[in-house]
Amino acid sequence: MNEKSTDKLLHSLKKAENFQTAISTTREYAINRPLKDYLNQWLLLKKLTKSTVLRRAGITEATGYQYFDGKRNPSREKVIALAIGLELSFEETNELMKKSGYAQLYPKHPWDAVVIYGLIHGLTITEIDQHLYEEGLSTFGE
Image (tube, rainbow, N blue to C red; front, side, top):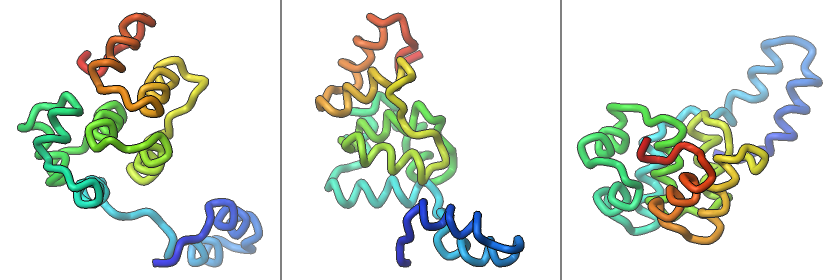
């Protein structure tokens, strides 16, 4: 599938004279793959095992395997934890957030700012949790 920039798609939607034209213009570029596909794709790209990712993410295997199998949908926080477990960069994490339908990490939100710092500096989930706790914010384990 060819990619088209979000700005160009938005422009097409604004220019469209009717709904059918608008939707037909954007349909082929829609994000409609399940999250499990993206998670498993990252597993292959990073050459990691599910158990390694889940351990790094601080997610129990019983729950985590359900995320990778598509039997359960993770919360936004758990998707971020999985990104940390997959050792994704900040940019890769935000791409995963967009594709999973969750809000991207936003530096003006205190919790997100701590997580962004952790991603950029390669911190573990335990180290990020420590900073979250020090700031009086909820941790991944809560």
